[in-house]
Amino acid sequence: MSLRFSTSRLGVLVVSVASLMAGCQRIECAEFQLDHPLMGWHWFADLQPGYTYVNAQGGSVQLVRTEYDRAAAEKRWCHMCACYTELQTDYTCAALNTLFQCNVDYEGLAGPDENGGSVYYGVNRLASTERGYSSFGSRDSTLEGYVSDYLPQRFTVRRRATVMLLTTPVADVLELTVLDTATAGVEAVWVKKGQGLLAFRRRGVVWIKQ
Image (cartoon, rainbow, N blue to C red):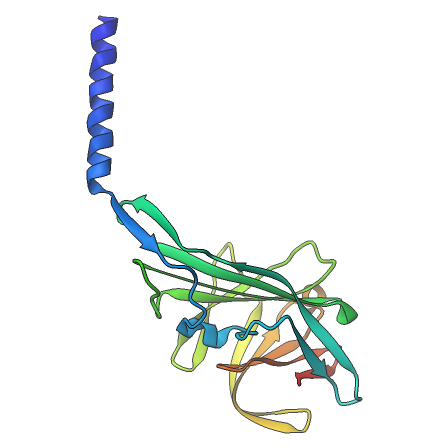
């Protein structure tokens, strides 16, 4: 009885595995594409090792890249699945004790899908134990925030026709106001599609990218 029962269960297992394999497909997921349309919203799309920001008093600070994690190409077996790929980047400003984080991800079968991805922005104090993000989806020339239980809203987004950054007027800019300034240490950031993080305000002082 025991042998017949074990043999029967083994047969069911073999059939189940065979059914799963029949529904699987071999797909090739490409590496993260640095020319993907969502990269237009990356804070530092050209991914330089560092950037200089200056204020009206002549001071300057450096934002230095401290993390760069780009998803590599891979082959996988799966059933009804899509390729998921992402780029994670951190830039640290030691002088202002601030961490700027920007991630981009998208999914699609063996290729990028312009409408299927998200951009993640985070601004946090270097010493903060809570380093949160807000996620955004691209729509036309602006961003729409996603709000969920596990990823709460950390910015309010306002599209500005023109904004004056120090003495320079800039057209069509997104102004992201930080909701929790105690955690972030920054009050606002200004972003422009294709140009990235134009400027940020910390303790009332505006710092603009050179």
